[in-house]
Length: 149
Image 1: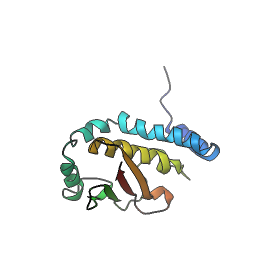
Image 2: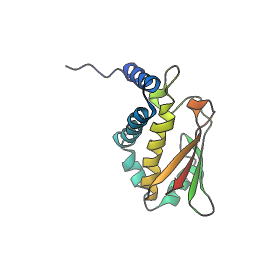
Image 3: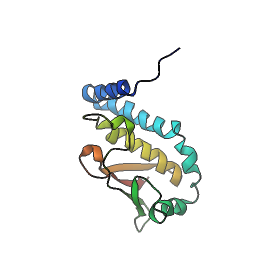
Image 4: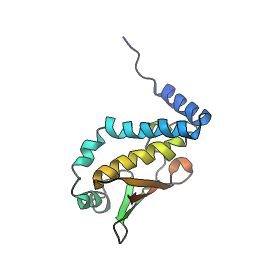
């Protein structure tokens, strides 16, 4: 019978990759991790309920205040850029970051791609995500700008 997965071992491997590998290798691995996080947690099914009704998603965040991590999500006047303001947090949402000196590639590549998957699906078009503040990078919240491509 196989052993249960050891989360500390996975965190250690991710830190090792982040500390020792080139940027292209880190980008490849952590981008795939973000993709897998989105789909293996079946968030595509959750976001699917909002496809074609972006306003309901915005209301879920801005009006209902139902998001655990997001405070506001707002379009610019041209509706070409979404600004996501995170809630003030005391820890990263990612379980892989629950360690000393978590890999910053979790922000730069993993979370970035996770959000590109999410907002691309929601909006029905490719998006480019820029993370402007992040808990793992020393901020008290995670903020993102989502550019419609």
